[in-house]
Length: 568
Ligand code: FES
Image (tube, rainbow, N blue to C red; front, side, top):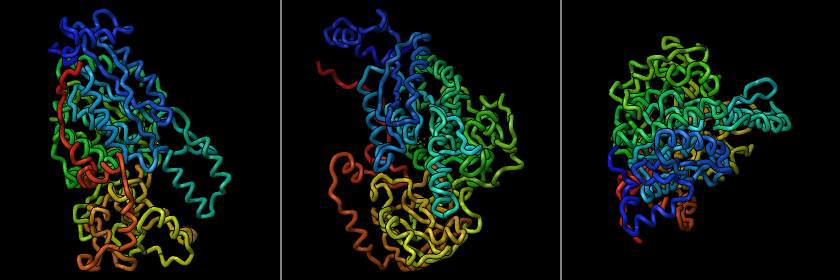
């Protein structure tokens, strides 16, 4: 066992070591300070993050494993983010959760950490923190919930909320039936059961090599999750012994494998900003263009909502992540390792597919090319993304007049106005939704379809926005436009009636107007001038654009696990 970091608090006969030990002697065994690794369990359980509420039980299993391996488990509650609860948007707080977790890991006598997350932002924030402090670290994804049913039909949480609410607006479903479905939507503990952001990031944590192999995607209510948590506790002690840190696991190869998996799984577009941010913390040079270069041609093999039919419980039953990865193993970089020290590819030897409806063979994909497409043009000089697999094929090449909205509130106020001049060919442009503009880059880009067009049977239109889209959503939506309107991007100078040209095959997004010759609309600028204080002010002043991960500029990179000076 190498010299422990925690020994810098606990070893010795001096007064300061006495203080550190004495206050911790509440229930710890007498030999707790004699060379046993101290493992933090960074736990995002919270009643206000219902997707993570079960993580206290998971933490107990981790703690048992740490004990069994000779370590000392220490509960470290960290900032949690409930996607459905937190206003104005959980993304505003991802970087704060990452910063707070990083600082508390560094400030405390910790030798290694087990990261417990689930709901959308929690695993990205924990991984960002772990990379910046670079202590031996391993993730336990909290797992998806079991499948609920309504009137005999499985409900995909998120995806079916959008679908059912649109049916109400279209007049094809009663409000009563819609509200009746509410109690069936969330069947059990765990995060959303579609291939949304939480499912995506839990699975990608494993592809990155940051979990015990084979555990991502185990449903939260499945007893195998607790067994996996126990085994992860054992592993965490071993990671300290071997000094295996995120910097020794995460490489460009790990991230490129994650991009392949993102496409094959039909994962969330939010993974783009999260992977870029994690890579930024890890010092790995990942770019927006890598997503297109590595992932665009990868086939979609997992038939999961929102792109397909099934849910996360089905994926696990059908063979899980490893079965999907085995189908595209030739596209994975064999150099990438996992926290076990073994290559990711070596973990796939036993993979098998038990249901070919859920996990398609490579030769019969759900879509032949399912990755993220990166668009550029005079509307998005630094890039924008679209997920062609979630879009309508007939709209992937489209020219239509812009209908511009300056904010989400503006959109909601005018979209259903019968007098709004909008047709199925129009392009809805929603701005003021980027990291600085909203602030926090909310999931609003998949705007509703205007009610009068819904009534005509229109279910998709081209939409262009500097915000994000829920991983459970679908549609022909151009997202993450950078630079955003509030940062001076050209989106701020588009006017209603300008012709917008989208060509996904050519990877272009253009406005036919001379945007350079214009000033942004005064009304749009006025809405940005709100006074700010506290975190929101720090965030708006320092947040980077979506094309590099929307981290704060001073948080990119790492400070390592240096031990600060003593104050006693
Ligand atoms: Fe928590 Fe969907 S709301 S994962």
